[in-house]
Image 1 (spheres, rainbow, N blue to C red):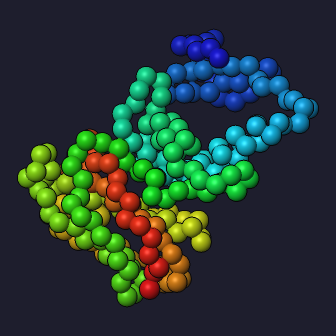
Image 2: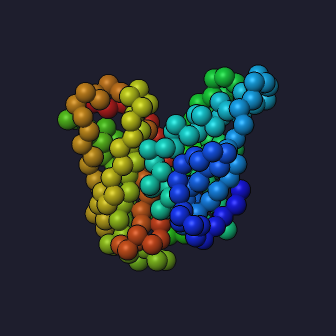
Image 3: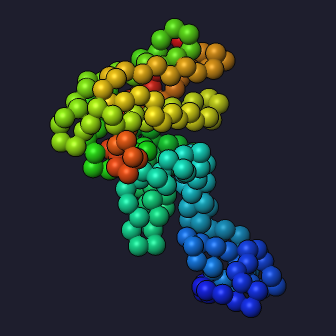
Length: 213
């Protein structure tokens, strides 16, 4: 793979003959067009592809959140790439070909800000989820205006819902209203918090699963 600052025609995206052009993290990149292989995939290759497929499918809807709040970029490794690597190694259970996401090990945000104190998840009437916590403003860098991030996943419908800011740290509670058609579905939720400017965040906290009433 090669990079260039300015060709005769400038940067390009797509395939021209044997060359593929793209823009990667602000750099114009050229690489050779991959050659197709007629060789059947090995068992090890099929296993790796299956693991990647499960993680890619799960994380894709969260890409913007992960890209903003999963730690810090390390060299050429973006936040999203780090999140992908973590989940591939730590948040996958089962054996080939039946891999599944281990929800308690999922991390949505990763940072040094103080998280919420004793967050609790509860289903409430009217197709809603209630999240409550203790206000720990004033401890460390925690501020009452810090913004709460709530992420909910419905595996039966394969849909994510995330809300930010859902509330402030000082509010100590938040009710998330969901589609009435979701009643009876089991949902899984995570909560995190960022400072008001969105430049700092806490490690996300897994709230468990609950059936929507």
